[in-house]
Image (cartoon, rainbow over all chains, first blue to last red; front, side):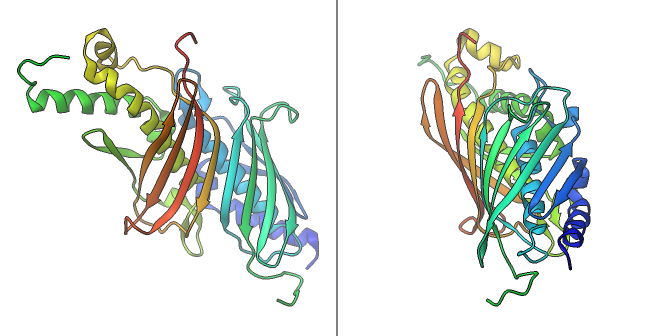
Length: 147
Length: 169
């Protein structure tokens, strides 16, 4: 299986997740160890009614999904993964009415753990809404590395 | 402090439950996830009723990590807000009247939130309780734990730091 096929399988898997579908998440781009996803603004997902800003939990959900997608699309990781730990730093509020994006990179994979960094942003990638660091489980190697 | 005849229990309960109801009903995402809060005195327990749309891994099946994270964060924010409202609500006067009318101060803003996924979330109801470890004028630190069948077997926990609403805006 080449990297492109693996990314496609990861995309199909992510797009089939009931909660991701419920929130309307879309895969924008996916390749070996890197994923970009989008979540359209929706008034149901607001966390602060006074400002119309999306709930922190929505940002968390998108970052977690996108990070998981980058792990699944990594050539050295098997088809399944689970989040071990996720830290999110909120730099600023997401602008109301704007679509939210997340970009994740699985930058290191060991035999048991995949490490990911990710950002969430609306219009300007250089002014992120949030940044995340996560550790994910690694089940087996798609490339058949011996354990 | 009024040291006269204590208020009837129904009056106290009604006031506290109405304030909690107004606070939680004001947050759309909380309603979307159908999270409810049960109150015993000042202690809150959040409940997340299971629903198919909360699934993140259909093969297991397991709750979505984002759902678990959201649930923990919402519980932390509500607990923190509730703990700051409590004294005002119980103190009487114009502050208590404002809370009763549903005029809440702005919600605290999350600075950072670290989620520890201990085991996969099962397809059933989940519960969470938060503890405010430090609440200053500007910053607060909150720890929150979530479980399902057994209170002592947590499936996730988190610690977050929050920026408190400032009186001068």
